[in-house]
Amino acid sequence: EQNKSPNAVWQEVSVTRANREKLHGHRSLLVWFTGLSGSGKSTLVHATEQALHARGRRTYALDGDNVRHGLCADLGFSDNDRTENIRRIGEVANLFVDSGAIVLAAFISPFRADRQKARNLVDPGDFIEVFCDCSLEICEQRDVKGLYKKARRGEIKDFTGISSPYEAPIDPEVSLNTGELSVAECVERIMAVVEARTQLT
Ligand code: PPS
Image 1 (cartoon, rainbow, N blue to C red):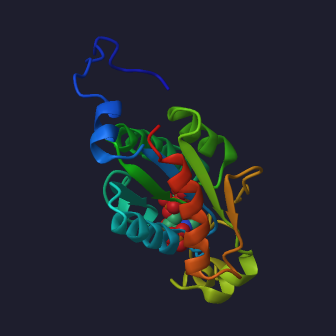
Image 2 (tube, protein in one colour; image 1 turned 30 degrees about the horizontal axis):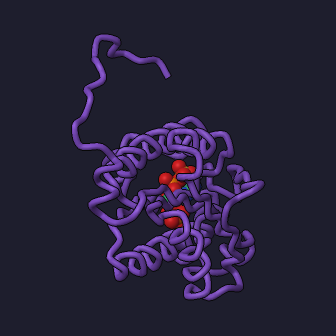
């Protein structure tokens, strides 16, 4: 990315991420949920956030539909706009990680290279990719928002899985068959990985 503010100097901080993590009693982390529309990303983000919150963890959830009303309101669903969407979200998520929060991000994020860039923004080990692995058939059958029907009718162009690609993760930290597992089972698996990674040493 071209930096258009070459004269902006980096301001050193006096309260660090490590200070904040100590105050919170746990490490911060970025948990990145990826999958087709209707694969359960938002449901799992919110259920996991509740479980973490109940244990006294500092959390923050970033969700596709919400972010697209503000931070990314100027972006659509072309390949370039999706890349820019994920770039901005990665940067924002990184700031929240620095604030000491366990960040839960729910975005289709269909391109492997874009997810890799988000991963590279945080320290190694501070990124957990959760693949919400649900077949297109099941997502389309559920069609919670009626978007697949519209996409099939040609009323939405560039729709993921129909007229725009989805590149599945190759080696995600957590892979969940969300077409078969219950929400509780999924949350249990996510929590096991998240809780292990957020222990302060
Ligand atoms: S991306 O690809 O990561 O930039 O997408 P994201 O920001 O997660 O936004 C996905 C939600 O936008 C709605 N929507 C679409 N999805 C896919 N393709 C097209 N063309 C599209 N148009 C609108 C849809 O509600 C997605 O929400 P989820 O929660 O994934 O179903």
